[in-house]
Every structure is written in C-alpha cells, then in structure tokens.
Length: 134
Image 1: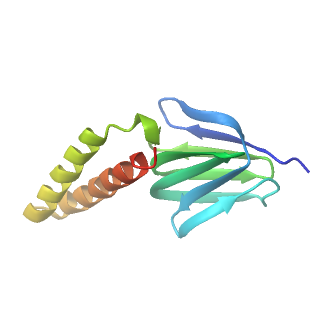
Image 2 (image 1 turned 90 degrees about the vertical axis):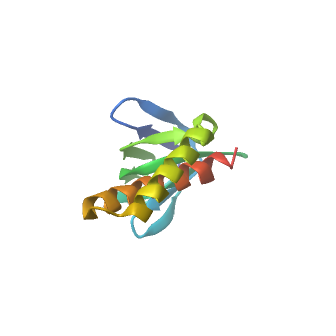
C-alpha cells in the first residue's frame, strides 16, 4: 500500500497546491474529516474553513471558502471557490473585510445583504484564523 497521497488544490484561477502528502483534513459541510492513503472513494462538499496538509513532520494550512473534494485511495482533488496558503493571507485586508461585514450585518437593510454579509464575515474570520497558524 502506498503511504502517500497526491493532493491538488485548484481554484478557477490557478493551482494553489500540488504535491505528495501523508494526510489531509478538510472542512466538510457536515464537519471536518481526515483523509489518509487508502481512503475509500468519496465526493464531498466543502464549507468555509481550513485545509490542514501533513507532509511528514511538516504541517501546512490553507484557507478555503468552500467547494468540492474528490477522494480516491491515493489522490485528492480539491476544487475550491477560493483557497490560499496561510502565509499568503493579507491579514490587514481580511480584518478590513471582517469589519465591513460586521457593519453591514448591524445595518441589515435587505435580506440578501444580510446573507452576503454573513458569508463575507465567515470568510474573513476563517482567513484571519488560518493566517495565525503561520
């Protein structure tokens, strides 16, 4: 049995990550779940959260805003709406986005504004949290 997985994290714009890994933790819509080599076939919807990538003794984190993951016994393809490595997150920009979303939630004029503001707030909080792991 192979002891590594081929992981690809893809967005509509680019390949964010592509390498062999020993384990991955993904933010499923029903909670986080782990994947190791030999995992059963699975197609999973992803939520806003962090992707934790284990490569031997090194751990990397990526912020994602949702998407899909195709898990095969020796590979994972993450098709994300957006994803970025923790080290690349602009914390100041994420903090500004968080503050804008909180302000819009307080104003709460239109129902669609509130839903968009909640999603923006969750994305900003996630980016700040993931960036703190560097």
